Amino acid sequence: MHRSYAHERDAQIETNERLEFLGDAALNYLVAEALFERYPDLAEGELTRARARLVNRESLARAARNLGIGDAVQLGKGATISGGRQRDSILADTFEAILGAVLLDGGLDACRKLVGRVLISNHIGQPHALVEKDPKSRLQELTQRRYKSAPVYRLVREDAVAGGFVVEVWVQDVLVAQGAGASRTLAETEAARAALTSYDTQK
Image (cartoon, rainbow, N blue to C red; front, side, top):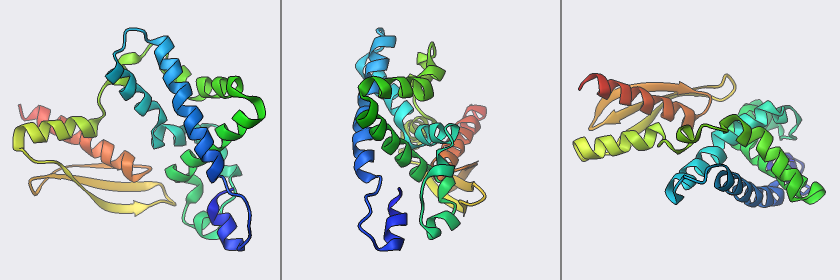
């Protein structure tokens, strides 16, 4: 259960946090193992980027949604009212906790099957999509190279219940683009993607 559930009851109830720790360790190992075996031509840096793409918060939250985890997690009233069942951070942490529980109950092979089914299978045969730098990294490299300045992301709207986050990206105090997403991170990614498109059209 989520720590908000235990805190509201002021009880010594074990939360998901220890299982999250275990699941996180297993997840990083199993994804690294799968990438190492599937893509023998990828260099170390490419493998690292691919693993980061697969185990980031958005990827884990998406896997949790596909498994229906949000409906099952025990949350406190405050976290529930604020849209916690759809919050990427809670979903990702809960997915890691479930993976930790699977590891204890069924061993590494059971974890391997789960990770392969919900995280790896959709990317088989698509190594280039995994190793490509994400839009935020690409935008930062472009603005540093072109303007000697890093992009600044500003939150315009946050509505976790409705799933709407809107972020603007500014470069040298100039508004370049805007993006929307189900989380702030996703909104920033979309804003960076839009900014890259804007710069491409200016060439």
